[in-house]
Length: 148
Image (cartoon, rainbow, N blue to C red; front, side, top):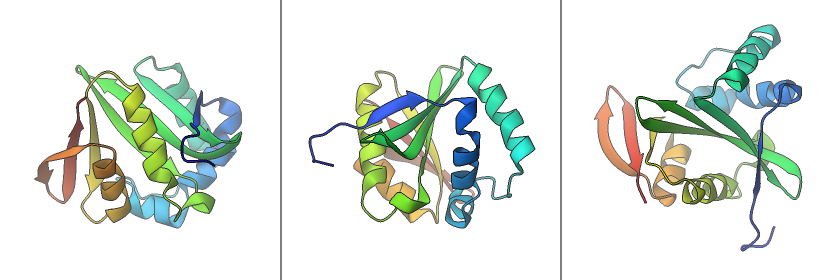
């Protein structure tokens, strides 16, 4: 992908369930997640169905040249949007997480927050590169805020 070429963000669909579950259950993804449990397909489909119907949650698949490379999700609650993201295991190590998140937040007009485990160095780098500022640490969880 050329540096100035934009990624595409498409709303997730139930047909993406198996792909998203494979990314979610990847050992490095689980290690970085607040919930480290392995998820079964039936549980994941129930969760994804609920998420897709919830107007306060938006889940997008980031694509590069039509190929899914990660996700971004916003959860709107009490006037704030919490951002979370996943980089496809096959795409790690080439800086694509920074591109996924920084492009997304620059399209977003409202303040965003991110909650990251203290040991999740990659997500901390992605958040800080994308303009998030650390506002507090609470029991090993870092709280970041992004405002334009």
